[in-house]
Image (cartoon, rainbow, N blue to C red; front, side, top):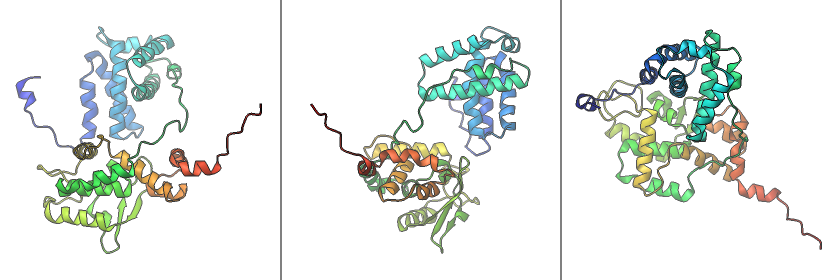
Length: 326
């Protein structure tokens, strides 16, 4: 990295700037891969994928296309020569050095890229179906939420944090919302007289309205009165440095991990608060329908995973282990 580039200021994050991230991914590909990857980006955007998803899929597909294009001036003729064995060979080699999440992301990106290539006449029509499947079992994991002790310890350590960061932490812990919903929260979403706060839906989910608790109201009021920059924007949580744009979802993740680390806890992300929120509701006897509504899910199946952490209910339906008669 050159000295000039090292000291260049980072571009401020905006929702619109996400559209430029995918071009940065394309430019890091070898020259022979770039035309096909740019067409892939446009194809994904035509299908309605959000900018963040486009970037993730292109970043994975780039590894595959670069592998095909290595040492060649153009990748198109070689895409037409691809076989099922070529796809399987690449996926197996990639999987040997990458974890479960990376393999799953590559699987999705490969299928989308090969479907795109088939529609553009760049590859065989049935090649997308040859991407190897990953065996998985629905609800096989357990949500990694924060324990009541860790949650209490984390919140009790906020006095030394800024008013903005305290307010963000209280919103996450109280309502279990996603980091994108914190980033997108606007002044109009807070109904002070009615003591309600509304968060926009995300990932196809529903908007959710919660009671504005005293703790959250006081945290927000302190931030808005004493720390929030006086700028003409609707976003609640703003960057500290000019031009004072709204905080990005990645910024929310970074500050949560930093705060948790300073509290002496493992550096968990914002989603741990979401799991803790759902688990807490389940422990209080709330129905799955109520939990799904409060999390903004449209389907009950999305909260089925939390049944695995309600050990008290599981014990109620479990029987004694039968004794073996000798």
